Length: 352
Ligand code: XIL
Image 1: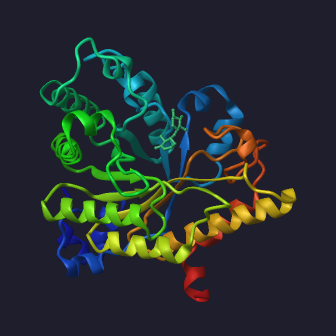
Image 2 (image 1 turned 45 degrees about the vertical axis):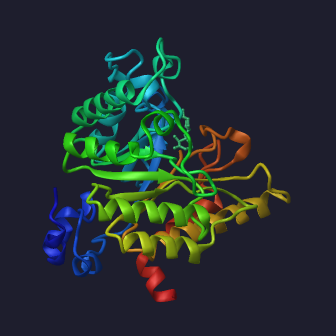
């Protein structure tokens, strides 16, 4: 584990930049723990496409991404299809691709109520805390240990909250209880003490009941000494409920003050509900990307800005949603320029 105190030395800060701020820092070291370089741009990607589709691969490699997130390869349904039987082939290929091209990998995702294998959702005998907790622990331990030293950031708990701030009643929450979050983080930390461990959620960009509840949860975990290292702001957005830069910034600031990284992890902007000309829709989308990119650039604890894919050709929302910075034909959209200039810290400094 990186000692947070080391971040007070500039040279050391540069060395640990790839791993973030460390954990459990004093407030003085937190304030001095600045990002040492520009924000790293990231994208979710599909390993199979990177292998089979030369155009996809070439495009993915040509835009300066420094971090990749396997879009589905690390979900439990694919990795542990039968109890105790792990199939790492596709996830390994995705990780190897990213690393072969000098990119970091965000591990996504260990504990989520979705993408679960059938043996978990339809067990032969009803789960109890006593039977399900060892399943969770073995799963986390096996996967995190497998990627120790290769995956420096893990979305350990995905989407734990409802919009009103109450806990999402996933199988894990219902059967194990609310402390599944703490237990998951502790198990992941034991398997790779150097990895930065995240809670990752959507609709947390505003100042409202959900982000307040997430903040209370994060503060409680940090006070208890639980190894939470970051908050992932998914930022699945659209033009009806756009990003409000000041609110996202305020969230990054308050979570950052707990000693946490505050990264944008899955951004896209769904245009299906947007009316108007193509041109005006793309400009509205670019403004939303710009708001998030600027919030990240203005926040020392936001080190990575990841979009959930990069081309409208391949997105979980369907091509008609046009949610990403490149068109289905790989042409840069206004959103791409907005992200690039929004993340440019020097430009921000000169213009703010
Ligand atoms: C979607 C992915 O795009 C799919 O490939 C996956 O199989 C299902 O989910 N929040 C998340 C992501 O954390 O994992 C989701 O991704 C989008 C919403």
